[in-house]
Image 1 (tube, rainbow, N blue to C red):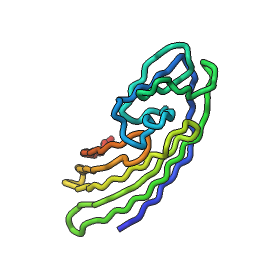
Image 2: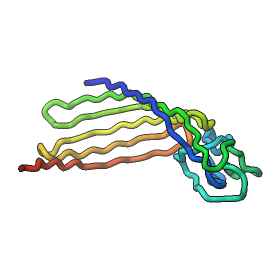
Image 3: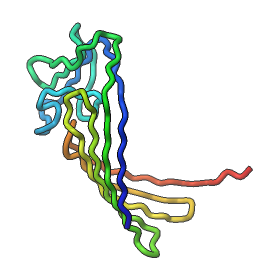
Image 4: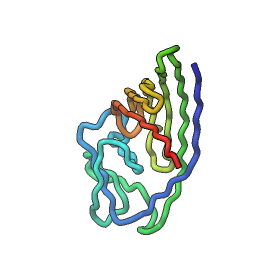
Length: 163
């Protein structure tokens, strides 16, 4: 088995523009950004974006009044930090070309009053032939902008080009 540790630190920029309204469904999971009136962009969750009135960028999650999420003038660029920390483990099954894996990661977009996103997943990869690998995973976003469960399925076909 192996243990993997991953980390990244970056920045992201948001250009202030005309009014931006983020609307979330009325039945928002407890603890999500919409329930607390926090700002969302970069958007990750069950919300929709549309233009609105003459206010700055705003958030509306079935609340009586939208919350202004930026003080920048239209056209101005705001820069914030973004970080991601992750840990994974995997175990190869002997003589079966199969790899079992699990991982957990936390991701934070600073400067927009959004909770840290946390995700966990388990999965497997199986090599059918030297050029063909199939994989699948089941995961859960259990903290952050929205709660969700996801399934991934994939196949990798490798073919060398001969010149």
